Length: 224
Image (cartoon, rainbow, N blue to C red; front, side, top):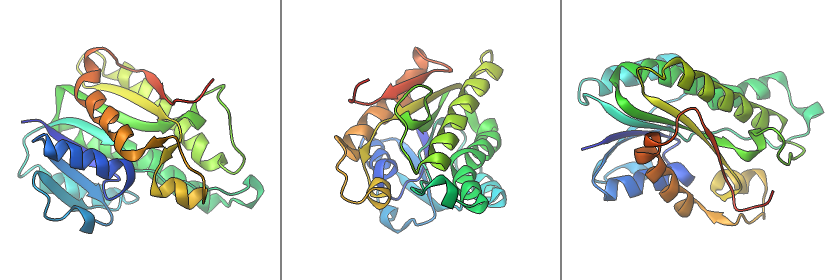
């Protein structure tokens, strides 16, 4: 039985990934600050973790190591988004976005690494806004630049562990209809549902490492 860790698990894409994986019979370790939506679901093991604090991640790792012997896939789906003009975005707001989108990802990968299998897969959920040369949007300076940093981190880790594993890949998502998108862009309707995107991400997390490592895959129906 495969074991997955999913962050940002209480809503949006993260919750859909957890639900679909659980239905398929996988063990899903679900991380979120709010675990109420995840309680009582078979095969889902929810943990309330504030990813902005490394001590919370350390405590989480100590807890799961007592019950789980290995991790086959880590899906870093948690994200922080602020839609605000650059000149009005404070240093603290930049730090808050970077803390969730990069620093917490790095901490979780480092601490969970001893439990990852050599054939395992770390999937970092980035954004098309973090890909060089794509369309950029005003107000997303903190978010998109943090997602660009996540892409580079993914490439670096894939290179560093290419001989021993696990594999590292990033998925750069286009607009997906989630609560986070609605909060940042009220009234905007994305062409892809959270459920549909989650189906793709789950399949990629379980099999994508057979063909990809250190890659950034754009997942968007828009052109270019």
